[in-house]
Length: 200
Ligand code: GAR
Image 1 (cartoon, protein in one colour):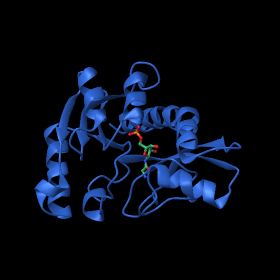
Image 2 (cartoon, helix red, strand yellow):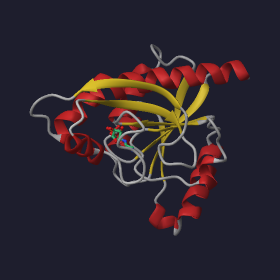
Image 3 (tube, protein in one colour):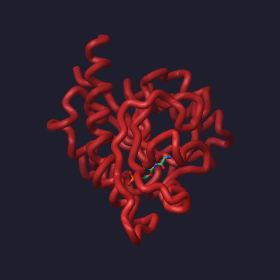
Image 4 (cartoon, helix red, strand yellow):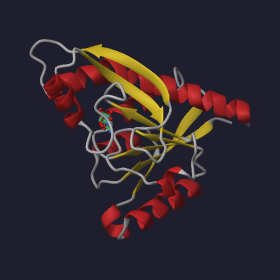
């Protein structure tokens, strides 16, 4: 039996798309059983529906508190029999209440070489803006396990990407996605799913 994966998203979902496209080629030991969004109308939900994957939307505002939001997420994941959680552009921090329920069973993709440009406040274009402001010549992407420290869990995979003359945050974001994130995330997901299979 393949590892049942839930992908948690907030926006466009290009990393979700990379995972969907990798199913049956790079990603063989796991299957995406559920996509959960914390934002209404996220385009990632359309990508999931087109691929015939179940979707759920869980809004923090409707739950009333962070604790209730995390409990609702757990309920939904349990109801779908999820074994591995992948944060793919999920733009909210999960507390220890949530992360401690799934040790080494949550992955995140971050658009820099951790420990640079990561942690609270570093998400999306802000990460690339910070890399350009600092003047680094190399950036990249990291896939890591998620624990209670934002972007602080064990690193699974990293890939470097060169910064080029004239880069804007948008141009750099696209290059980091194309050259690193969309390749690295499915590979890391496969590696973790395969090791979970061995444990079974
Ligand atoms: C990706 O670049 C992802 O690494 C980043 O947001 C983008 C989401 O794009 N995530 C973070 O910054 C998390 N700290 P996508 O919705 O097209 O996959």
